[in-house]
Image (tube, rainbow, N blue to C red; front, side):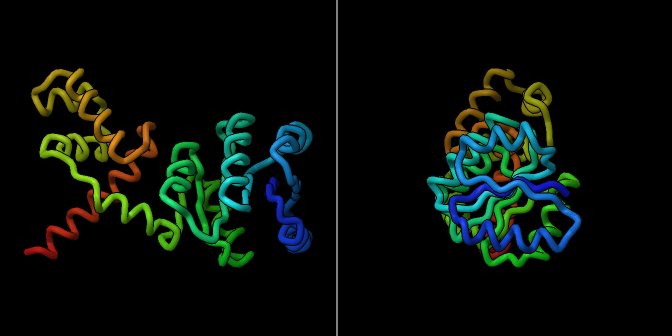
Length: 206
């Protein structure tokens, strides 16, 4: 596994470099957004790992996605505000893990991400859950959400609900605005989580 480790925290980078040396993996460490392009050009990267203060990490994430939109990306964080989680989802971050994740767990989860999984630590999603709990969807929006989660395209949603496709797009636009996401893949993940919580709350109220 070839890893790109991006962080301004030199001590952590040195520790990570030391642990990687004990494995068959190769490592490229960079400390600035500018260095990312150079590393990607000179080094065959399988997955990138970002760690730092939220403002630094956001800059790293944006630069990385500008350089390589498809590269698997894992972010380490002590905590995550709703806005930070939103950035991660908007920019297609494949994993958001706690900094308490030990080295063996980190490497195992990186391998799972390379197999196509998306891994977000529940511990870091508390603010997202709180935000979702405050969002209200209309009866029609709830129906559209169910179809989005079921992977229905807009045309089929319109057919199932017997409404115009333009009306479906309007509902979807409203839904996306309420959750603060505007890409279907990331929005679907969050809406699925909302549906599960909504069903759980409904059972609790009975």
